Image 1 (cartoon, helix red, strand yellow):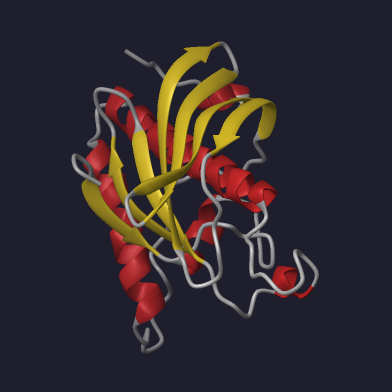
Image 2 (cartoon, one colour):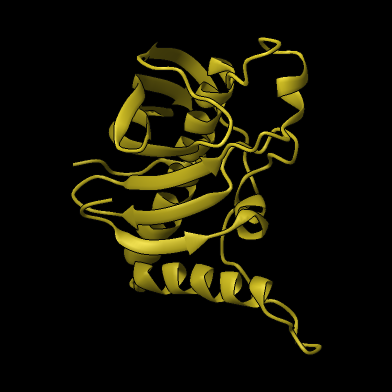
Length: 195
């Protein structure tokens, strides 16, 4: 997270942005976001030894399934696309995209503190959309085990009509465990300019 603006969002806020729910919510914290020159999002997933998948996947070895790493990267790309879309839309309409990021921060603060009867702040975001992966080209470099903190970095690199391409990296302790590209369809209303 060398060049992103801190944007600490937990699972309650994440679930207001994307449609995924436990036990298949593979992002438990957004760490940072950068809008320019290209949208980049940093996120993470804490891998607990209590995950149900460890009961049957590689008995005797708590090996995190690679498909879950891919799913976490995919959910991170969807989060990046939605945040970039709203920031870009607000900027095009003459507003300030930073206001949306601040609204997300306020929502996170309200979800981690007692509200004392006050409703959570309104979120000017599209309803959670499904993204659909059209092409996943991810190479696994190292295994991931229980107790690890899996970090995701996704960068929107190309946009052609409704197809978005992201460079994706997953790492543990600063070492890449998976790397590649993901291309998928996004909702036509979420078309973003990419430099």
